[in-house]
Image 1: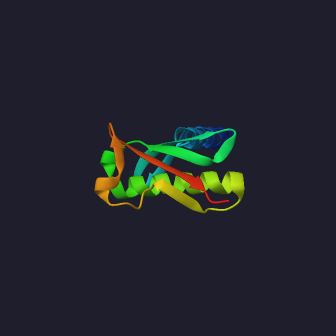
Image 2: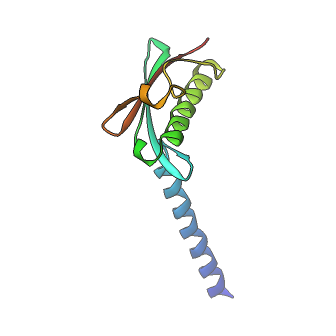
Length: 114
């Protein structure tokens, strides 16, 4: 009985480590269509309404990369202003030819509509 309890506790400890590693590894990445698209949002501390988002790994899929950028903007606006309204300058809903793409990354700019 004692050996069984030790084995059970060991298995629980190892599964907890695996869970913590997965949570940490996805901190700045968003999963869409089974792929990770790391996003980086920049905004001025004096004016959080305006922002710029860089979405990495666009080659994995343009549609999911657009969704990752849109999600990042929505999350930012909800966090700072309590609503999800975004006014895009260079947004994810434009035709493919109008997207700003540089070195495998998509650049989106906009502002929270407050």
